Image (cartoon, rainbow, N blue to C red; front, side):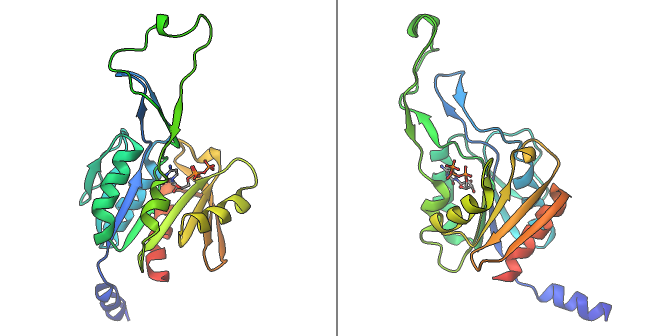
Length: 221
Ligand code: CTP
């Protein structure tokens, strides 16, 4: 019985899994930026779990203070547009994408070459003009073919309804719904919504345990 289980494990196909993690930074000047809060822990945990499951993993990450899991190929990026460029290179040759990065929706219209000085603003208020960043996930998932695409959603209000809308809008197979308590935390409660209508809630689990379950989605498509 044990031998048969081992055989079944060996027979499982090695896939190329792309994972994104961390924030993107959108620089205003050489020292200031806009970003979303993100430790990168969820994406790094998925990358580690996917390697342990025997897959080839490329991790595209914004700036974070985490060590690269053993066996993972890491591509460092800074902005949302850098992340999109990296995914345009690696996604076509991949079998799956886990988009755990906290991509900044906006970037400053201009990046100043020198520091933004007090004298450049008004006395008490200043205005920063922002332009919308590309939706990285929606852009690459548009032509996903048979690839598995897993998006993430961090919601503060009616989470399930919003996450369902994101599933469709971003052409994802699954969306993993978090609330703000997940930020910088080592554990959390997440809800996995499938494009087939299935909804699974994972109550108070450590991120590595959540990551193992998410990597298990590779077998469900
Ligand atoms: N995402 C992306 N590119 C963006 C914004 C988000 O690829 N410019 C991805 C995230 O990595 C995540 C998913 O889309 O996998 C949902 O991100 P979220 O910030 O919840 O959604 P938004 O599209 O930004 O919608 P909103 O902020 O209005 O909730």
